[in-house]
Amino acid sequence: MTFQEQLAADVDAVFLNTEHFAVPGVYTDAEGAETACDAVVEEREQTRRDMSDGPWEVRVATLHLSADAVPNPRQGEAWSDGAVVWTLTERIERAGALLSCDAISPVRKYLAQDGYMQTPR
Image: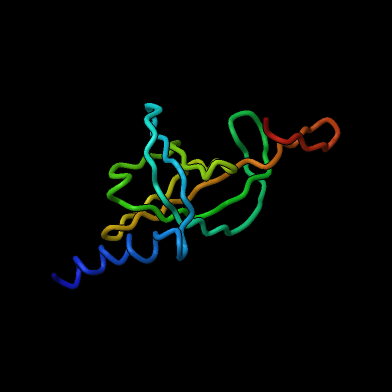
């Protein structure tokens, strides 16, 4: 086994192992097809983002996924652990067997008339 092959095996065996760092979840592509896919969720911040329907407070994270499970990720597709849905945004990087994707999860919507924030349904 070459060094690169061993590195790829370690991604699944250690880093994306739910007994170590990863969380089990489901990846949903643009066509609605679902794939079981473990991920490491590295939450970075909670901030305000302008979305198509106005400003939202969102959680921002980097998702680390298996490139074998998700061979062609695209912006707008999603991964969920059953409690939180993360939507892929602009940055998707591939490093061998590992994908690193920026993602957001809405927390609440800002309502301009009174500064009230509405939680997503």
